[in-house]
Image (cartoon, rainbow, N blue to C red; front, side, top):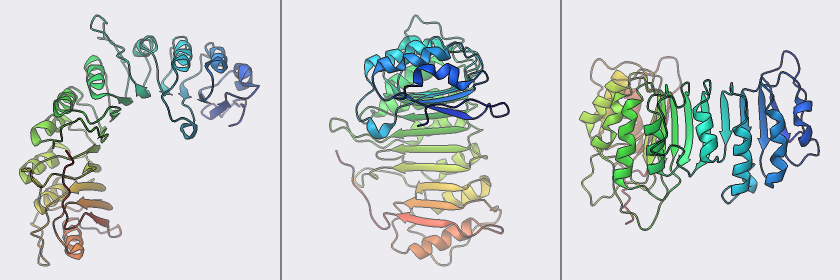
Length: 369
């Protein structure tokens, strides 16, 4: 990385990258000028080298701060002394900070951030501590937050989200750091999202596998709280074994999310053919085409065994913006028929044909238990 550069008038929105191992790192405040707004520091290395961050404490113009290591050289958890050094600086950071990305923080730093009046985006990629004990007042936590990117255990994510239920959240990305969460843990967490009706983007990735966990498939009832998110534009929902739902629930989903542009519901290992698992049919495609005119990207498991070359789309189906589709567990051996079905369902007048990529055509995967 560059050791540093002066922020020029008219370019105050430019990132200033700083290398910890540069001999100039200790002079970071002098190098960056008076109108500094954005800083990115690669935090690889010993904690003592982070002392230069303290020199940014007086930089009242700072709004964006990226304190992430170069993960190509980091395979283990962030050392405690590095977390404490970064957290110590965060507790003295300008109160007008708006965007922050870090690998890990201690509870004191998270509580400080919760009180910042203008913080809009927070990314913590190793959330392993509960910043909000039961006796901590959370009524005004994160009053202006719009985006959370977190990698916690699911029980910890549940406690975190319960504490910030009054925040005006729009974007939420959760990647579980634990082995496969239990079905109850997943259900409880999803149920909390009905309190965040302002969400426009939700990413949920729970695909870590632990041999001591019991395999399960999420059900329609587990997903039902998401139906209250009427402003949803993006949904990435990825688990080990996917979700069981039928065409009727699929229609309800399409009606609940009229603005959806990206819909991805996927399973890392597929569903268990020995369990009673519901899979929507091409009627779900018709519902999406009729009710979701902004849909561009679709990934879902479908039962297309009823597809024929004479497939006719019912009247009332609108054109959509679909450009990419990825279908798994289709239970057919004729991808061309499947593509024909997709093209007939999602008509195009100004766009090229969508990319249709059937996954596991004609195959079923078994749950590993």
